Image 1: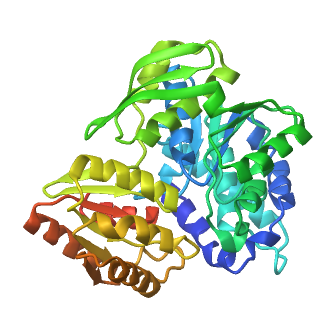
Image 2: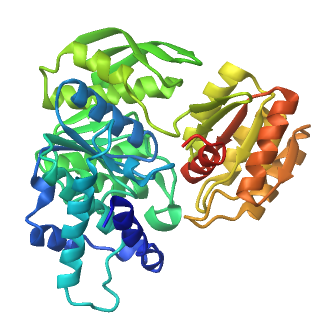
Length: 438
């Protein structure tokens, strides 16, 4: 098989996963798979990162700094925008093709040897996660930076016993699966906390913070809270990126730079660096600076075109939309074009409240086909918000994703305004692919 053959084979399990109630998933099968493969998840020490927003950025920053330090770092993340290998790679480059193939063959041999049992078929994320662990072992990686997919407690990655557990900001998300309160969602995310392993926690609302403190106390772990143990300051955002300073416990790092615009990225960098310095206090400052300067993550306020200026951002929660909007309007003003689509289970009312007044034209579309979405409902909510506030915002409904992308591009060219595509990583990927930015 080629690496693409492996991915296509694993993708055949997506429909099976959609039929499963995620709340009924247990990790016993992941432990079984791993044990039968010789426990590849223990092939190297790891960092384990969860959260409602920013976890992908923190994971990539950790990997980038470790790579700049000379460590061969395997990275696991989701979703991908244009190439499935964005999900499992070396944090800056892909694994060699033969690594993907060998790992895929091991994985297929494992499943072929197991008796088929109706109702207990493997899922897409189980197989992707095992493929990553197998590739990491085959490539003889020094360390792994691993992002959770959904939640934490029952996530397929939660067989790890990491050096440090990291939890970024918690928001109401996937409420149909994780619970409809911050406390319930925090309890799911807190499932990655391991006994005796340090926990690095971003600033949280009181309801979530109480849950994390309770779990940390029960597991007897040392909790490092970002606002107390670290601080991002003097943040300057420009179209080229973000300049900032960090205080990490008793150390100061001045004149840092990330080539991605956004105040939130400076805070993500602080969370990543705090986590690294807990595990490796002797990381050279040169590696920290180089790693942050090399940071790149597709779909995080990524500028993919100049004429017209097109920005894509995978923001898909109310808080992340607010951060994205703050960056976009700070650079381009409030007369831009918005192309919006998101999956079901999101806080659409809050998103519409934030976005409706901030653009001259808004186009509602379908964010691809990977996850369920209801663009008609999104259009109704945005329409009601625009009428309620008496806004002059033009609202268009174009359910066909490719048609909507082309309409938005031509409109941005005509009015000479920047275009923002957001609401879903899948929509961001569709935009990038349609505009030829592979």
